[in-house]
Amino acid sequence: MFNLRRQIRLLYTTGILGNLSITGAWVVIMASRGFSLVQIGFAETVFHITSLICEIPSGMLADMYGRKKMLAVGNIMAITGDIITAISGNFMVACMAMPFHAMAYNFASGSGDALAYDSMKKVGCESGYEKYNSNQSVIYRIASGISTLCAGLALYLGYRKAYLISALMGLVTLFFTLKLVEVRVSEQDEDKDKDDIKNREDLPRSMFKKLISYFVDSIRFLFRNSKAAKLMFLNSFVGSIDILLLFFLQTKLKTAGISNVFLGFALFTMELGGVVGSKLIVHFKKIKYVYLFIICTVGVVFGVILEHSGMVPVMVLGGFLSSLCDDAIEIRTNAKLQDMFPSEQRATLVSISSFTFSVIMIVLSPLAGYFFSIW
Image (cartoon, rainbow, N blue to C red; front, side, top):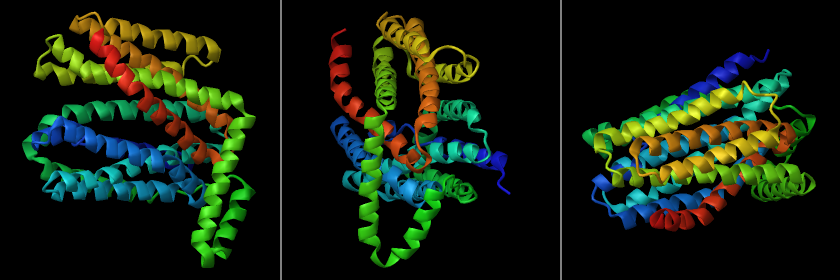
């Protein structure tokens, strides 16, 4: 008999282990190795290019062959990237690890959410998805904040030991991932499993055809459901503003005179805004989405305005408010989208949403850099 509580506990466990890392401040670690900002920027570009290429295919593979399997593949990618970084002696080898880190993120982005929602749907408890998503958001924010605070520990240990420890944590994460139960909620999925067995003799061609089929079906769904497409775009746009604000606040706070000792705590405080937003939203289910979207958008914009005060406490408050509003609207939007998505295309459509966010970030990042530099 399927045990939903055990499944959700395992997803929380893998969420904690997957996001908690002493190598989270990888930019600082690379800088400590003597790499220039230009080199670090190039490494980040490799990451984002890989992420754009693999985001949607990773979701389609999860829908085709199983979300649990793709989560495990993501764990293996992360471990591989950590090991390559640990043994890298020069910049080119270090760059070779970036695609593996990007694919680790890609394979986890849609698979976990899809597996959680379908697990709840299997036993008729999908109304609890918003609370689950809220808890995962809290886990992500706190783990990210702790990872930032661990930058000093990583520098003390040295990049080799730090990344080997990260690889060991990846192995532990993989252990718990393999304990998850794959969930199918439609007969169509079972038919696809039978077709997979029949088509193993012509696997490459079969896989390519199915990838194209899943992508075309997902695009058709978005054309037929313009409301879902609009929600994906608006949610990604608001989220990108918050992410860019927090990113540029790192340099703005330094300019405002904050010390290195308190910078990490200031960034962690801003991450806590997301925790508050994640927990608050589950208590306001009756607020109409359009009102909630307006309130949260205004909150994010107000956070940007506070960021330009030049006063450290007010700037931190702006980042806190922006994170709060971003996480609140993201959780409500994700819950609405999951209700709209068909189960057999769920991971694919979640990946398309992540892809949309990446594209918006690529467009807005240089514009935001110019905006923050002159204001």
